[in-house]
Image (cartoon, rainbow, N blue to C red; front, side, top):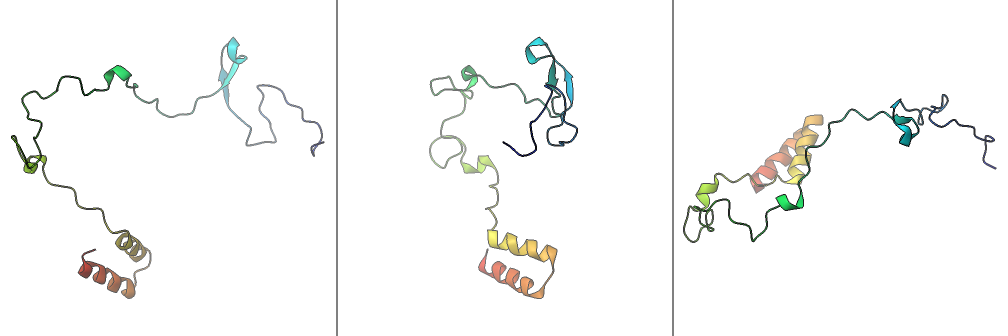
Length: 122
C-alpha cells in the first residue's frame, strides 16, 4: 500500500496541499465535464502553410525575366556582386569564451590571450 493512506480527490477540484497540482479553471462544455484548465497567456501561432502552397520544381517561375544563373560567376545575368556583402565568418569559439571571461573578470593574462588570437587571425 502506498504511503500516506488512501487518496481522496474530487474531479475538477484543486488540491489545497499540493502546489504542483493546483490549476485555474474556466467554464467548459459538457464534453469536458463542464470544466477545462485556463489556457496559458501565449500567442497563437500564425496560419499554417498547406501542402498546395509549397512550390514544386514543376511550378512556373516567379521571376521569368531573370536568368537561372543570376548571382553566380558563370552564365548570363548579374554575378555574385549582385548578392551584396557576405556576412562575416562565424567567430572562433575560443575567442568568444575568452571575451566572455574578460567581461566577468578583467585579467592581464586574458588580454595577452586575446592579443595572441588576434595575431593568429582567429
